[in-house]
Image (tube, rainbow over all chains, first blue to last red; front, side, top):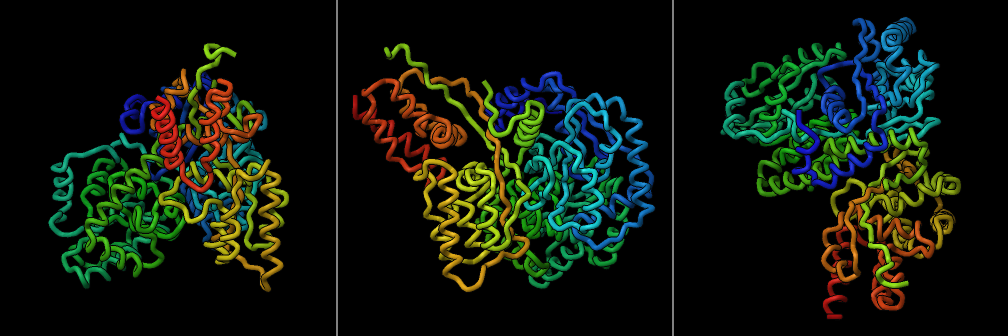
Length: 412
Length: 222
């Protein structure tokens, strides 16, 4: 695992010094992150990197994962979809399972969470844990990673009953923030430039990965990396590909992704994607295991065009990853993608498969312009979306809450 | 005070962390009403905060109110009137708030229908916290400004040239504040700095302007 110092070549020595200055104020504090999956998805990925860095800064940091039955995860997936705007009715019996599961996990985590100085609860799955900690000593923060800008009102009303008890909430972009009786921090997530998913790779290795999957790098490749999730619109991507294929017959499409342990819908969507691709030999659907980070890195580096055609998106870290590899992105005009993809600068925002098809053709036609956008995209990520900025924001948040600071943190 | 007694200029850096208020406006009337009660930190953020937030190209408008009027309400006239408001001309944030409200009210009198935005384009009122870091760099003599300023980060420029105006007694910037300690010696330089408008520009551009000014002044003096 990369040490803090090794980031100074990428972000500069000052940035690392500032992290140390902030962390001085948090030395020895006990911080616990709680989420619902150890692998798969952006949250687990961020915590894998963030937790060791916080420890290196002298903060006593732990990461705990709650466990639950299939029924629990069915409920939390429905909650997730409803909070992202789907009109789903969740039966009362499932809410009971949700609370019972959180009660069981609370029992297991009782001592640790009661004594922590700061507890980060990630997403809705463990959000109701707070109800079982009336004796809590520290500050509790609800970190919402999903787009809840227009949630199903009744599911949000239910969840809000728990969330109001937190000391602060964190949202990825301002559009997602809901009115709550505590500070609503806006902290975009980040990628780690030194992780297996993002570090530089040898060109030969990139080619070998494509060869392994029988994809010909001599012909253009469109890639979308994401979980098989309907909000990522893989069927729309196939439609865009088919529209482009009429004009560029040697075009290839790669849909690469996995499923997460807390996502029971993944397999259903995967089957639908397979059915939609028919017997087209130029569509490659890769169901990758969770530890395929270097493979994904290689796929992103080798692709000509990277898509993230989501119709709902929390932030879209795959967009950030692609941009860090100097690839402009064609992204859905939703959620955090809007914060990253700036038309004609770092890629294109699209609203339909037709729009995506148009931009694919544009980018393949204007290669110099595409390269220029790719370089800009990389710099944009360097300045705004790397893990060092994310860590700095979390440290700031903790300092503000622990020391009760309203407006100005001046480190002497 | 002897020059030897004057403390070196401590170079600081800063970042802003955004905090949503959860308060939104969808129509122009709603905007006017919400503006009347909103935290003053939010007025500050929407005039100055974008200088340090993620963005790509040069903005068409320097404050978020003008930008929203243009992009969400599609009211070009209002956008132009709001865009020309220069926050440095106001003694405090309360006066600035009143100016924005006045411009909006004037527009509300003029038009027949109240413009409103799509729900995905509501105005989200945000305020911020500032975190100030010590770079450990110190400038001993004013002459050194000509060689060091070009290496200031955007955060340092923001802290010393913009944030300083709400921190210092005379609502000035840290450079003038420091130079004033040397008595009349640098009054001409202070006047030149005062002529730089910190608002209608970007932080890299401000750095360039200040750096050129210091280089020019100290080279000419030699």
